[in-house]
Length: 205
Image (cartoon, rainbow, N blue to C red):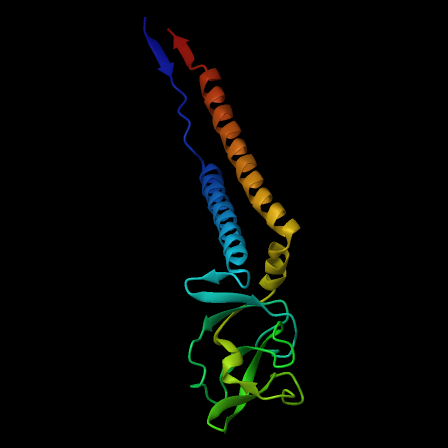
């Protein structure tokens, strides 16, 4: 008499491997989102102004004066400057408005002037018909544009800077991450239970 025991060996299928890769990617993206939100929120709160990353200031564009190159609602990277007298025509600079220094503007230099030994700039938005009303003194310039922009992301950053945005965007990514990990744990436990319940087929002769 002999016995033939057939063991059912489950091999992970293609779809299971794809699901695992997708699950890992989602987890990584959620962690990155959560980290970015915290970094930018804390940086903005500490500096009291634009958030900073790797020495660059990240600002949101609120008008279309520099379209199509810089779209309304995009974010731009700016390099803070200490000596603002070395710019030339064609450079894009960020400065405080001579009329209201609480207003920050990013426009292109049209002309460089020297008045009584002091450098000032004539500026204009690429999408504007006329030059800015007043020359910009060099001590009003706070940064230079480094030709890096991400469309639409500024709307999210504007929301993040609000109190409701800080609270919501710190809670939501964390909650999503917890829920996703709970779902992964549930699937793992379910597979373990299915394996335990599988009974090998036995043939006896």
